[in-house]
Amino acid sequence: MTGSSASPQSGFDDLGELAAVSKRFPHATTVLQRAFPEMGPVELRQFARYVHLCVAREGAVLFREGDPGKFMLFVIDGMVQVLKGDPNEGNTLGLLDAGKSLGEMALIDGRTRSATCVAMQDCAFAMLTESALSQLVSEQPRLGVTIYRHLAQHLSGRLRRLSDAAAEKWDPFEM
View (cartoon, rainbow, N blue to C red):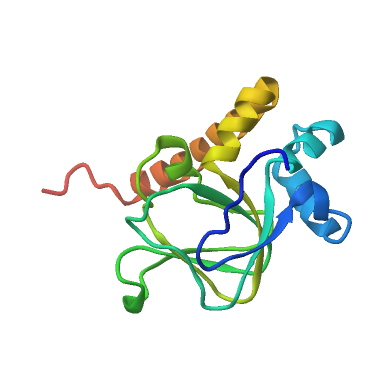
C-alpha cells in the first residue's frame, strides 16, 4: 500500500486505499475529479494511492473542536454539519455535502481543530492523513505542489468570503 495513510480514525470504517477500491466506488473518483479540476487522470490515479475511502454512520462525530488535526476529508456521499462551540447548543457554521472538504486548516498548520463536524446521515469520505500527505510530497513532489496549491486557493476563497461578510456587517462609526 502506497501512502501508509490510513490508520482508521475513531468513528470511521476504513474501506481501503482509494486506488484499490475505486472500481467498486467510481463516484469517489468523480468527486475527486471535481474537487481537483487542475489534475489530469494520471495525477488523480497517483493521488488515489495516498487517499483512503472511509465511511461514518449518521450521528458520528468526525472530529471535535480542539482535537489534533491529523487528517482532512473530502465528502463523497452524505451531509456533514460544522459546529462551533458546544454541539448541543446548535451553533451551526455550515453544512457540507458531496464534493466539499473539511479539516484542511488543521492538516496544513498542524494546530487543533477549529470546529466540530458531525455526520448528518451515513457518509462516505476520501481521507488524506498528515502522514500520507508527507509521503506524497516526498515521493511525488510535483503532485504535492498541486495539492498544496489547491488547498491554499480553497482556503483563500473561504477567507475572502469571510472577509466580505465581515465587511458588510462592519460599521466604522459604531463605538
